[in-house]
Structure formats: C-alpha cells, structure tokens
Length: 407
Image 1 (cartoon, rainbow, N blue to C red):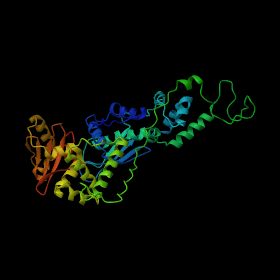
Image 2: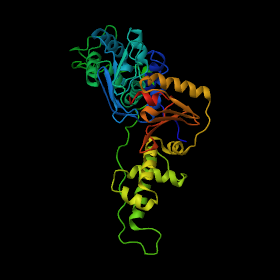
Image 3: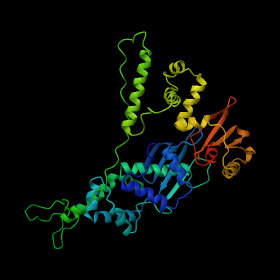
Image 4: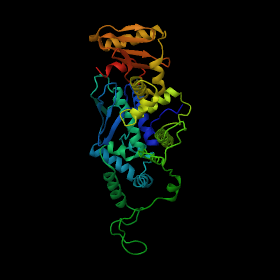
C-alpha cells in the first residue's frame, strides 16, 4: 500500500498546516474530512492571490463546488513591522533575496506583533455547497492543498498577506541598501570608501559567525510533472497468423506498460502486476472509456458493454476498493453504527421521507439512493439506474457526507 499523502513538505508548508490545526481554531470535526477530499484529488483550478485562495472541489454531484478561502491582508503598519524585522537581520534578508523563507522570520515578525501564519479570526470561507458548517469539508480540502502552493513558493505566504514577491524584494533591497554601517561609519549614500571612491549603497554583507550559523530552508518541492510518455511505434509487420496476439493488441499492451512506467517514475502509481484480472480490466476500461480504444476493448474483453462500463466507473471512483464494494454481499453491521448513520442521514433528508436500515445498508426509496457501509468503516453511495444499484461516488467516512452535497 502506498504511503498516505501528507501536506507540508517544507517547514513553511508544515507550519501552515500546524497553524490551521492548532491556532486558527477551525472546526476540528471538519478538518479530517477535508484531508480525505484533498487526498482524493478532488480539488482543481487551485489559485492563490492577495488575500485569498480559490478552487473548485468535487463532491458527489456532477458539478464541482466553488470554494474561496479568505486570508486577512496586513495593514500598512503591519507590513512596516514585518519588513523592518526582516531587514534588521542580514541572514533573514539574504535568505529572502535568495528565494528562501528562513524560519526565524516568523518568530521575529511575532516579536514585532505580527503573525505571518493564520490565527483565530484570520481566515474566512465561502462555498457553494449547502453545508452550514464553517469551514465545510470542501473549504478544509482547499486549506490543506494551500500547503502545496506554499511548498512550491514560500513567497506565497507573503502574497496571501497582501504583497507579492517583487514588492517584498524591492522593499528589502531598498532598506538594506540604505542601512548604516558600524557605529561611527559614514552613511551609505555618497560616503567615501576606505579604498577611495563613493559608497553606492551595496549590501553590507553578513558577519562570518552569522553566515556560518544560518541553516537554509529545504528547497521547494519540484513542480508536478505533467508531461506524458512517448507512444510506442506501430509494428512494421503483422505477427504470424499462429501468434496468440494481434499487432493492435500488442501495441495496446505496450502503450499501457509505458503509461504505468511513467506513473511509477512520477511517484503516483504502482506496477499493478499483482492485480487480479478483473481489477486490471476495470483499470484499462476506465482509461479507454470515451476514447477510440473503448470499442476494441469491449469486443475483446468477453464482457457485455454495460458490465464493462460499470467496472470502469467503479474503478474511477475508488479503484480496487470500489470493485470490492460493488460485489460485496450484505453483512450485519454494528446496530449502533447503523442507527447513528440513519439518524444523521434522516436529519439531512427530512423532506424525502424515511430511511430504511437493513444489515449494512441505508436506503432512501424516495430518491433511489442507497448507502453501504464497508468493513473498513467507509461508506459508499449507490444510485438505482435502470433497476440496478450502481456505484455513484467516491467513499466517505460519514454517511451524511454522501447525502448533503448533491441535494
């Protein structure tokens, strides 16, 4: 099993996550659901600007929710104190000018009465979902993925507070170039140098002791690789008539192997060599669905098209776990767990009538929706289509998460 996705791979990204969880006083019951959504790659078009992060988060409905996380922008007085604290220490200024955010900057800004990282009251949120909680799980997902933006660029933390990279660096250069030298030394502007000429305001440098003791922050995480592998060349001649494969089939396998190798190289996949035949067929069907590869796959799979489509959609929603969910027979779940889930779903769906409970399943007949509890504690949403229950959403830790968003 691949390691669980974490957020904050640099010190400043990790500090953002820590501030969210411990200092910003966000609802602790919503944050875990947001982490789950973030790990499921439900967020797209993530964008950061002065005072806000925006994005679209996919819930259980077809159209994603519009989400905005607002971050309080610093006043001019606060920026004066922050930049003064940074410029006062050559090591901090040198790090920023070199594209790094030195950990001591946060402490020095706090000593000057300004918090770079979010605290209670600094964050606001807005989401187009019907959930009344603040933040809802969609906003919480956006909060966690903001750590990725900070990992890639520490200046994003300053941009959230109202000033972009160029504005900050320009002000730091101005302050450092105008700094006075040691006590009794002439001012930097127009003062004669010891070796002759005029001091033009060059950087005064860093004491050897400070330079030796300064430890640079870890480098930002490299950007996600978005390129694609090359396509294998077609075979020059057809294989012998007695071969147990065709040229097109062999080419399809080569393309699939290249895709899997590329995913492995990026760190977001595995070889899949240990997958059962049905799981690998579902994976390939998911990739082929909606493309020219679909019809040949249906023709050679030995499965009805509807069944193959069912496997493809299940794989897209939850991989091998989803395949297990659609084939799992009913089983007797803990009555207390089912009762609590029924009450939560019933409270959210009062206008749709009763919620029926049977074994590990909650059924809402009025809207043809069924929620099934898996043995791992996760819930799956099924919808009745043409008289058959079909998987309709990725899993969630709470049954009501699969009900609130689409209604």
